[in-house]
Image 1: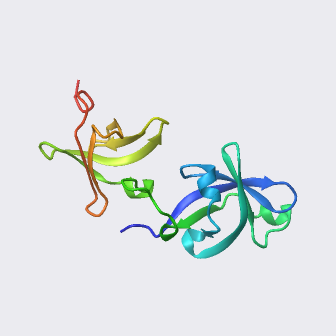
Image 2: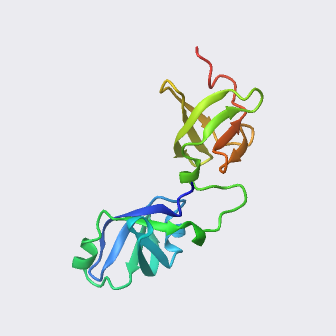
Image 3: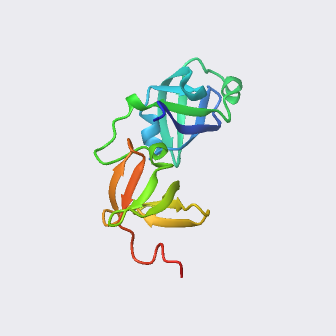
Length: 170
């Protein structure tokens, strides 16, 4: 079952004296995180309103409604921010990382089972999926059209045509 509320970042410190917080984004970019006017604490149970947000280097700086002092902002340090999946519009062919995690990976040609996706790495040029097999061994595959044949979130499957040598035992 897909999570309705997804982790989008973590409050790591305060910013200034007027209650702003610094957020480490766990999403595509600080700008993306700053684009939301409504976020949540406690896995979606507590709604918060974002008055404004801006990017500063690799951090998002947010002003949260009713947080007006450094002392109030300090109490939020370490809290995880969530976004409602319904508030996000993804481009065609893109998925949430949390939906990719745990997908079972199969070969396009012979349906051989390789393992499950256990990590997603953002490398810049393309993402890389870590696949962990049943014995605990890890393999890395690039997320490129030559390798990824089908992503089926509903069925929990990723179908791939692996590059030569990735799964070789040598």
